[in-house]
Length: 80
Image 1 (tube, rainbow, N blue to C red):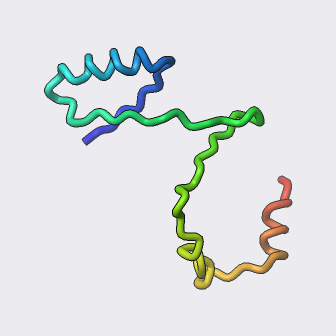
Image 2 (cartoon, rainbow, N blue to C red):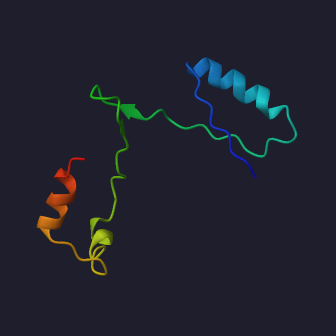
């Protein structure tokens, strides 16, 4: 199955396009997604976490790949 992502400029056009696509028998599903909020700085997308996100699920994610703060700083500030 292939996936196609289309950005549409208004909610009215989203409805129109959704109705049009439903006419085709080879379209298996149509899902609407809320636009991702962007900041002014470089228009980087912001995706907010769910209110009930489990922060403890991140505990131990580096246990099999330990890193020191010096290694992290060296890699972060390395300029080529």
